[in-house]
Image 1 (tube, rainbow, N blue to C red):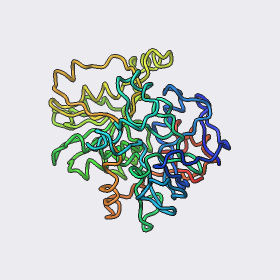
Image 2: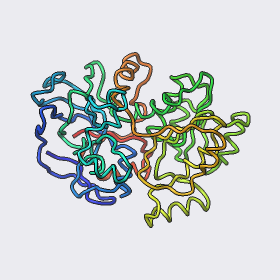
Image 3: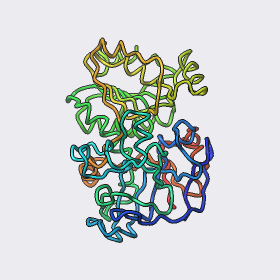
Image 4: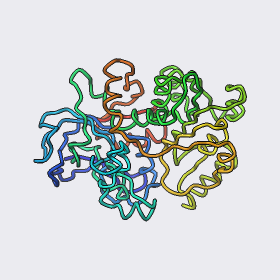
Length: 389
């Protein structure tokens, strides 16, 4: 089969690789019908996630048709059309029983690596380094899905691939960021980053009762989409002094909920931005936490800061004293996608949201290497790329 494979920093190639096979009786093989490049894939592309190996198959946002099932898979049949969550969960451990699927105890075969890096191992993830299990990803013609009797959700033929693909990751990720904040009706939410996750966080905030959402970015097409497609008030951080603007827009209190949807490659301005870029280039810190620092400083006293943006290691000069003094609550982590699949599918079926609104580029796997560059560099007004095999 053909697949997009990682061969180093800024080196993604379309390769012929062996077809996947059933390795465990709970596996299924999916013929991919639509896949996407995620913002967190760019951290792999830019070389900031360790334990990648040459030839690793990329991709964790994908869907398709079941073409083979292991003998222990009881809930799927050949021919079923499914969306697959990006975290892999066993369904039987303590964390799975508490719906914390991204913390599964049993799905990362390289748990020892993650334990050394993080203290404990999270769940395995498709196409996202050997630190998270070394699983082949879904930017391919076929993919092996472990624990297939737990993860994939069947989708009705009345919905298109583009209607449901983002249930695999970015729609639940944006929704969870708001859901865990327990926002009160009439509250103000600020979102750093108007990429796909940030846009879904904006949409979700309104669905869950926010009165005002303020979106912060500097890419014109993203800001335009946040304003016109998602209904946010927008700030361009290259033009607006963000902390002062947020105070003015919230009667001096600051947003009650701040969502950092950028992660380890945040852009900023001024001396601190150069400092972060230099330290990250020299691998003296693994992330550029400009947006995170700003969110901490901006958040209202007693507020909640949610971090769906991916961080992979050590960051520097975090204003923890400000967070402590203001009594902030932090919530963060990979998304428990399985928890949200059915309720969010129901919202799509009721036409409460059309997740395809943010797709700007419809390509094929052959276009993948160039698509990574286009998406990373924000060329051609690119906000979201989907690809067919």
